[in-house]
Image (cartoon, rainbow, N blue to C red; front, top):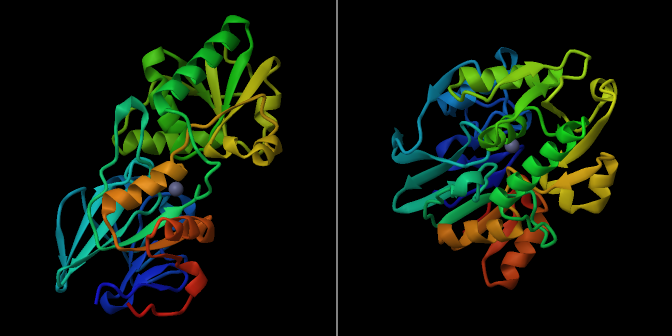
Length: 321
Ligand SMILES: [Zn+2]
């Protein structure tokens, strides 16, 4: 019965009263990670301790059940296990097993990470996966070489007394980029919107390299990190150059929107090939796609002989399997 998957403002296993990243408040819901689009004030949420720590007080669920990675939890007749998703601190995939059938929900996932780390994808019969970059032109370079290129770009700017500004999402991307650049010895100045996120990362147990808050003056010798949208604080810097750090760097139109001087395709999501790899690693015989290019990616999977469909397209419809 675990094979019954429904889309109703989020992924649901109706037989088990379990909601996965629902967009509306539910009685019991799994929150895969702390990005705003996934956190709601559910009556009770299942999440990792790090994810809870990264969700601001005002958006926290009213009750919670904390679960670490790889610790099986019984829920009725079923077994639930969380596995690291490699997307950001605390991000988790959920594996649900009942009656000999298993389902894996990836949440936002990243396979290949800087430092040669690779996210493990557990085997499952049914796979519900994100497909943010589910079009073939999204193919990213090797993360370690990209981090090296970013470091070189920053060093070159600093050597010419120009402030390097990395445009990164405030929560997750900013901190992961700081950690990836830490071995190069940079110090950072963070735009105000990145500051609470950096603090919560540190309080959730992930110490960051030396940083200060950007205070309207040019911080000599420091790499500035700011969110891609709304660059008022950045414009006060005097001589600076900006670089967009995102998978969207592969989309010329999107990259142009942000008017960055340079782009680096370092992403906290899988590229097209990694998404294909997630399917292979899971060994699933049925795939549902959610988020991003759901229809496109499902079509690519079907061309390769995988039973796949976009879950959101079948909203409110129980899929008879
Ligand atoms: Zn996310």
